[in-house]
Image (tube, rainbow over all chains, first blue to last red; front, side, top):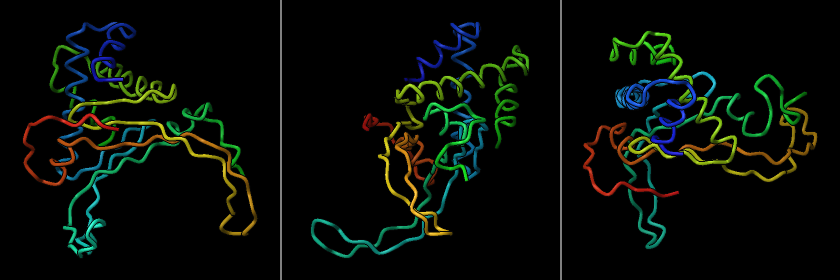
Length: 103
Length: 104
């Protein structure tokens, strides 16, 4: 699925104009990116959380040559899927609890 | 930022849409993404990243508290890979537009 397909679904199923659907989809990803760029986390209930983590510099090795190198500190983006998303991937409704997680 | 803040931000940009309209569209975006992943489809948003479904085989696990062996069923898990542009921007580095990767 691509952004274009998301847009198509919205204007076919929800009934907005193609332009409105396109504008809102573009703006949505644009705003999320802007937030993450500022290091802010983005929490979408029912989908998941996007969080920016700071990695400290560490020593590593070039696996090919074995040379020791310094891996610089950096900021990375991680996504943690919500329980609802995880469950719908495994054919369960959001309220059903997973048999393996049940006590 | 929560989904509610996101809806407010989007709504500010489009005065001709009601807040309810923005909410409906944004919910539809994420609903359609959940649906796509539930069907095992992958999602690719240029400049943002891609979502794929990975399969985890059934395995024997242990309850970390009691140490009792339990079998963990096979499952599918969502996985996000950040796109080049966003990876650079999050790290505070300028992003130069080149051939953007389309990889797995």
